[in-house]
Image 1 (tube, rainbow, N blue to C red):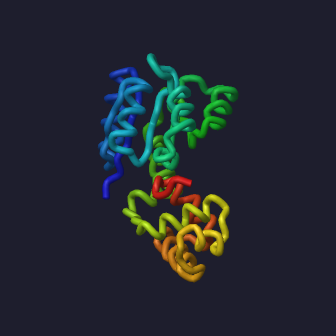
Image 2: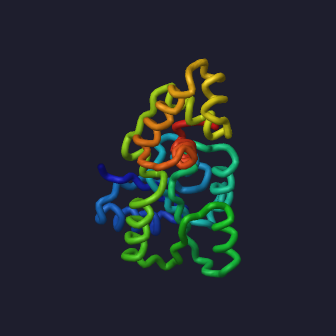
Image 3: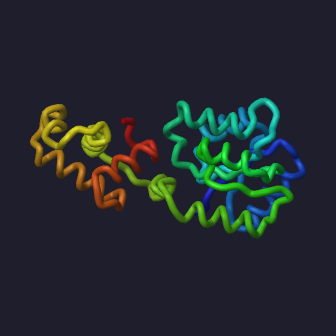
Length: 197
């Protein structure tokens, strides 16, 4: 499956260069010209990774990342890379506190950008969506209660099933998600938007 990237950049020439380089590297690339359009694009097609300029009109990259952290759990697991002309420590610290995964400084070293993108796509919860993991209703319900801190016994009462049935559904979900504990399963499922704790 070809990974789909979203490039959010207000400068048309820079945007065109990034699209050209990433397309040549084998990615499908979509674009937006500002943070507001970028958020809408993320909601519309949930890209596998976002590359976003910091300084933009309407909504800056920082504004966009702040928006994501305050109300869009279905987008939480998408890796987010900032492009910046400001290679100073305070800018990077602020971005990382908001949840940025990486920074690439302008002028862009495209070989470096492609390697960073590949590295980010090869790990992390965003992979769950690309693997098309699907939980049954009962698996999602059992994991939701686990994410809320309920024991299997408590979840059994809430779900009106036996404790053994709860454990069965949680173990199936863990197997599908490729993790070894119910906490990991609940965390990854929540980040991928499969459950809403």
